[in-house]
Every structure is written in structure tokens, then in C-alpha cells.
Image 1 (cartoon, helix red, strand yellow):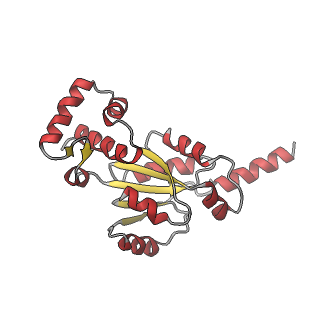
Image 2: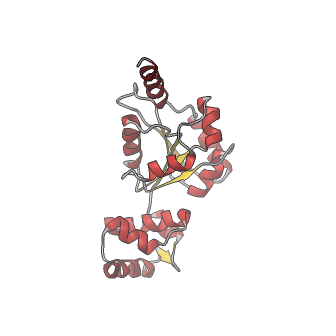
Image 3: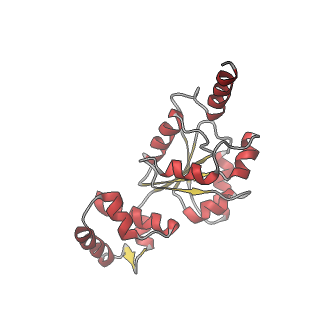
Length: 203
């Protein structure tokens, strides 16, 4: 299976979550003609990777799905590095942004940006295949929808690998957990906000 086939299957996978039209998203993501894409899609249908406009289990097995999550209230270079590193672990990167309620629990403050705006910002990043808003209270409900092969954790995320692996096993999902490192750990949204606030007050 070549890179174009994988890109097509990745789009079909994304559309299973977003409910977008896969052909239109394929044209947008690959810049290939509809006629050429139709030929490639027909070939994928013949080999059993796509069936009735959906990804089959065989087609899904050809992809390595990576899930990463966070609040992403202020996008900074540390986020970009982490998401690039997460994308390098597989074929498709799905990012989950925390709900406003979850963000308040995690950060002990209201986020600067509403969850839908944070989702829109992350969706605009080139390495991200799709971004969804998480579930309040139960991260495994989102994991069950995405069914990732890999869950990528940022260097500063508090989740323990064993907690994630055990939770995934309860929903019959075997995952690999990857702890990503940042070359610039001094960057954090909270620190940027604090320093910006101090600078504003100092004017």
C-alpha cells in the first residue's frame, strides 16, 4: 500500500469521526483530481479496504492512529514540537482538546479561549488530521471513539501510563503509550499567560 492509498484511507478514517464527505475531503487534503482519486478509491474497494463509503476493518488495520490531547489554550512552540513528534508515531494524528469544564479542573482557571475556538485552532495545524472536543469526566469515552494504536502524552501531562493502558483494556483496546519530550520545556501556556499579565500590569 503506497502513500496515496494511506492518505485516502486516513481521510476515510477521519470522516468516520467528523461525518464529512470523504471525497471532498480527499480532494482538499491531497490536491489530486476527482477522476484520479475515484480510480484509486475503486482499487481500494476491490481489495476490501473501503466498503460502501466506509473504512473496513482491513482498511483500518493498514493505519496507525495516534491520539494526543491537551487544553491548548495558548499555542506555543512546545505544542508544535509535541504534535509533530506525535504525528511521527503513526499515519493519522487525532488531537483531543479538553472541554472548558475539564480545563478549569486542570488549570484551576477559566481558559482564555472557548473549547470550540481551541478546536478550530488545532484543526488549522498542518500535522493534525482532525481535532475533536473531549468528554467531561471520562477520557476513555473519547478513546473508544478514536480507537488509537498509540496514545501520545506530553512531557508535562500528569496521566500515568499504567492508568491509560488499564483503562483501554477495560474497553478491549490494546494501545501503546508514548511519553514525548520537549526540547523547550520552559514554554508553557500558564507561564506565557503569567508573564504577559505581569508585562501588561507593568505598563
